Length: 251
Length: 248
Image (cartoon, rainbow over all chains, first blue to last red; front, top):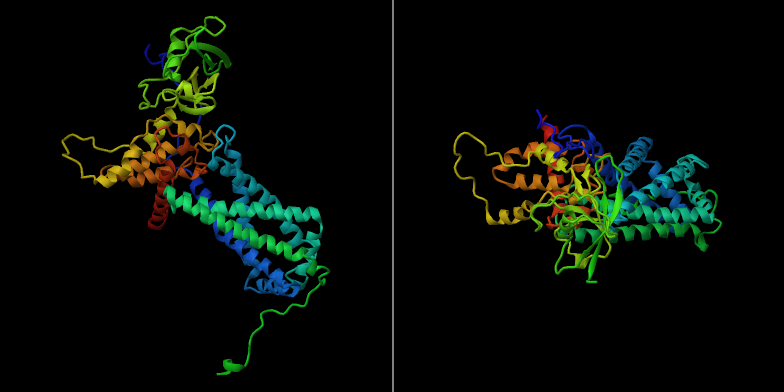
């Protein structure tokens, strides 16, 4: 068979391998990563920002919010199932995605390509921040589930350090960016916005949403460092949800 | 001396040979493009300092951006050499082979992974048989309008070359194949394989590996709506997997 190995048509087997059509489980894991980013992680992030916003009303209101959240039924199960484990998975799989991608924004400096890179860096900043944030605020120092009234003071002490304040502000920007663009990516990749115009419009909506979240987040950081909040009590008196009684309810 | 055009070409004698840059200088001609310059250099392989060298190797065929053969990196960017007009390029014009595909020689690479991918997702209309099947179902003009841009794919692989996710670690299938899945799933006869194509695209290296950097649609010389196709097919794959899960 002299023609079987013609030098004119060299057979090359290296390079990117073809798709393993219908085989493997990476689809499930990747889609799980994508879905978890929106629900529950995104939903939790919104809840967290809204709760933080209570700090603008002062130490007692903030403590009441902490007490309310910790009074939810099966709160420790909720915390692990809908917050810790999803974030851990999203972060680890996100790093795995990053390591396997090969950025080429140097050669192709297009907007979408920059966003691709930004999504990875903001994700890394978020991960590093969340690890220290959870360790220091949830698992170290005064235990807030038992002492909700100490919440305001604990955060205030953290933000009194200018380095930590910078860390919180940078992380807030990174996470709002990551979440806002993440929603946009989710809509694009799950086929919710398959049209150019739809993606453009939704881009504006996501950007506006991200800015609003950032405003809420930065406002609550401000709540702890503003002059009026100076010398907050170490343990603020906490009255959970005032229930109106009597009056017309007596019918 | 008349006006000239300078080229720097990355040469490599074979897959395992070291890469070297060679400089060439050609006389400028009206409307010359990179592929016509490559032909000239191959016909008269003498470097700019007068040394004879081996003729350069490259793929090309139609010379009018319709066959998809002459994709290469020109000044760092993947594009068709035939539609790269010299007058629009910064000099010296750097010409390199595509970087994501096994090199054969000089500017020639082996892009058979695309054809293998197209086969694995059954990107065709199955009409083979032993008797005349008659005319196919009617395709409405609106559907034709939607399909036509997708049918413009010339298999140049520019979308894959510029994709940050198309690499050996992910084994990503690339935008071109996904767009062809949309095309053939839209076809009234081709859609007999719709479910199989969608299931194929959920395999390792499938549509989920897309990072939506959108380089594909920027680089596509035929302006194929690749990101729209990825979005549409992405939804179809998810729906198919959910259906399979619930019916399984």
